[in-house]
Image (tube, rainbow, N blue to C red; front, side, top):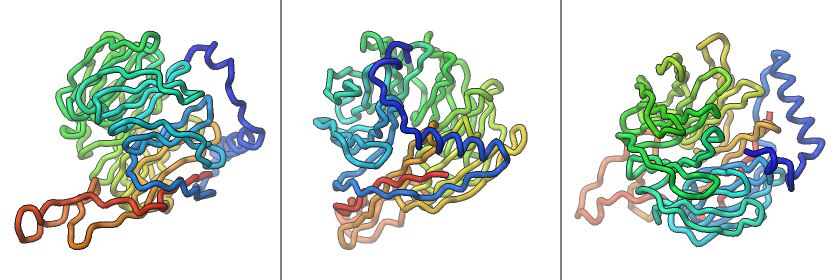
Length: 366
């Protein structure tokens, strides 16, 4: 982010938030592990599903993508402050300069909006099924990760024009950038990581995440060149980005879809929707990691966001229901149920629907 855009119109954090962040970081430095717990639950409502939660560090707002619209929530008190609608099937949000970018998989585009007014500014046509998205400050590009097409599209954050597209030879999931010119993306169907040069749009290396299977969420410890991949077989794989290999694995819950890393505390997080837990992991020695705690959250709380200033973790969850007599199609965590007998139209698996009024934001703090 350019210094000019950081210095104008930014909401300053309240004194209590700064003090809370300093206290959490100091406790870890002194050797005391923070124990996370739910400090607030905010009912947001609505009957649609959801995907990513993303914090805008400048406006202190959370963006929660919900199919055709994005809910915008005050990160401090959990109150709804806005909404961006009119989309077809949205997933991720990223920020660059004074604009925000939303992947709309339903229209194969990236929607651009003003991050302060929330006004939509335009659409950028990209590849098939854009899902994850990230901003790389080194190249000043936004990268749309296209799960259905198997590509990544780079967008110039100055002009909002497509700068290029690269095939990843697989089904990509979440990604992250190290701020020094490298972008890392999980390849879900091959259980690999792809490392690409953000300026030349070339693949530098790729490596296996075994014994990890079907990686989804990803986070980075840029200072120590380690990335954390959350895997659907119940492990977190830690990779050395320079060596291009897995150096450690730790057990996590089932149904992971997001991972985060807090540079100040040195803790890595995994949100596990099937288990209904938040796994907290720390490094105990070079390339030795252990689980600090598994915090109870809620079933379906599979995506999350971390505020590195206050060290708060945000998750969303809801209650679900099924049509009578219909088997559920599980999104992650374990095999699908066996198909029942009967005509083909009665054997079709369906996704459960959200019980109206139960969608909620969980705020956890150390």
